[in-house]
Image (cartoon, rainbow over all chains, first blue to last red):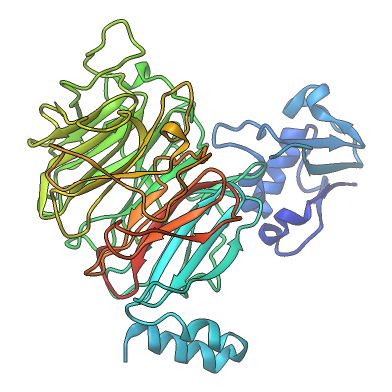
Length: 96
Length: 393
């Protein structure tokens, strides 16, 4: 089985152009949003630097959806994920 | 053949479409590096400074509070502190005058793990001494000093300042808790100083291991104790390499000079319409000449009387005179922020400033006469002028 992580276009420079990153859960356990991001970091650390602060928090104007549900309104990085699942990283509607 | 010319020729061979772009950047050209809330612009002229060409926006949509051109060690490296509202901040660089920029894979200015703080943005980038040609300093928010020893590619936090006992009591000003000013002694590798809003002015004499507050005589109008050891909201400090111990300071209310590297400060707010302001710029050739743009008050942060006037002292603050020839003198509700006033290093100094409303003004004769260089840029937060081929601007 696999976890699919959708990368926004703004970050594909750091995923070598990949719009989708697949985590093979036979090779790497991914039972939460945080674990999935950890697996993403092992492949594309630059993506994770843009999504998370150096304190390990999700940046305030970034949202992570799990199968369409915003993880901010669940348990954040501790939000459990099923297998298979689709995780979507998106910029929030904010700016100036 | 100069470096710029050889660079242009080599790039033209491999990128013919950029030939005219690069050929324009020759030794002696002037570049105004303009940071705005929506990107950076590089505005070029030859030494006559009568005609300008705007190159940009670079990093569209990102705010750029810090820019520098490092021309030591044979480099012509533009550095930019960019902040994406969503994806964070990073220092990027360009070795071809902005035709291409690095996009570091990792966040290269990063607080050490375990401190409980994360980078907001880079407020200041300053190439260091000529004797340390690969050292560059960066001031950031939350207030900290970073140092690069490889010309801006990797950065480390200066631990001595972070560990200063005063630091936990520093309070954010209106722009955030930022280290926005770095002043170096070109002759003493151990001595440098920084300013924090709102923490005040701090100096090290041992290369950054230990820092001492140097705010004696500087007012903190917004605190019960008007002259505390630290906590002042210093807005900008400048010095001249020919006389580095003499400092000029624009405070959140207050205009000061120190002749002893900040051990004591003297009020020099003589003949100015307001001693509130943000920006301050040293004349490139005269250690007695300084420029400021007074702001009416902290409650109404526009130029006094809606007249856009730069003030200049030529006697180290004993007197100040307005420079307004060519600047709007009616209904000019303009604000000039702390890093938006700059000077080039040509013999007849070019003085430049940008406004929050996106206007860029310049003078090619020490501020005597002004003209508008650009009128429709995004809100300007940073202006840095440099001459191509001049190592220290």
